Image (cartoon, rainbow, N blue to C red; front, side):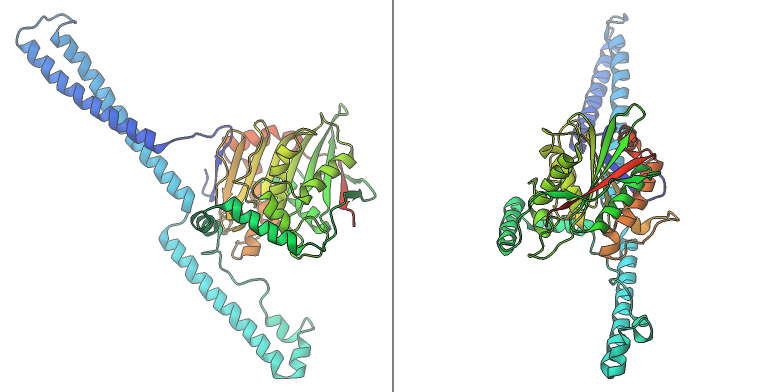
Length: 440
């Protein structure tokens, strides 16, 4: 790995290591080496007492035992070093930051938040001082220009690691707690119109030259989310032999209320995070049906935030209807979702993004699933669009496109294995995008 704070786990080239097993093997080898050395002394004493000088006698056995003892000792020492290095790598991957750096970031965020609050206080004080001050807030000049945009910086402490640890430590029965919340929210949405399928927008829209790579997929996900209304987009790439493959772009949460018919709502998060199929998932299925995707045509599901949840759930839910070969998620809490064997899954996570940690469980470390973890706040790439200093920045698709660009350049053998297998979806070229909106 380069100096860029990015690492991965799982996937085709992943290495599963149980440190307890290595520690036990190291101890057994050390013990065996010691016992063999004791045997060497016993055999050497027998040889001095006049035992046969042949290879089968005490002297020959002592020589062989001595060699094996040295090998056991050397292997035990090598395993001890390996255990320490694996443990050190785990500690680095889990935290990524030293205590001094963490304290420095907390101090900087605290100062930034105080400054942010003071500037807003000055603006509000000016507005309340006179009607003219209040009226000036409606324009792009005057006190309004003093107001800072966005949120105060705070990802030094409010980040994915904190979210993961808090959920894991405090939620004893996660599935039951989420089901209770989902039931309460469903009751609150009693007057919300039922999901009734999707309707295609006029099209499809030709794409003269599609953006290549994982970064390009993130940018098209961003475009899909801007469509609003829970719209799902399907990009069809035709090969020279006439065969087709499809990329389905699934939006994140767009509706936080209880009256909007948009299926990409808060209730969908609660259903999907433990593996259920929400209305947003049914919209994906109906979009594939309306698009005329044949059962043997390869499909990749891609989603951000809630869209990644729906994509991971869809890998299993759609397996009996479509040939789902790949899944790509960004900023999604997918650790509790099982995906089918043989479906290649790539998860992108920003350490400063709280959303991937909301399920309190890391993604499975399997051959078919690889997770790329990136600390964008410490990123040194020149084109990085943000420092992930606020929750909104850390979760934004613009930043995940920057992570995708690093993935496209190569981020370890497991990641390269995934991008190689998904090459037909990621290669630039001509394509068509069709949009399907939930019926209103």
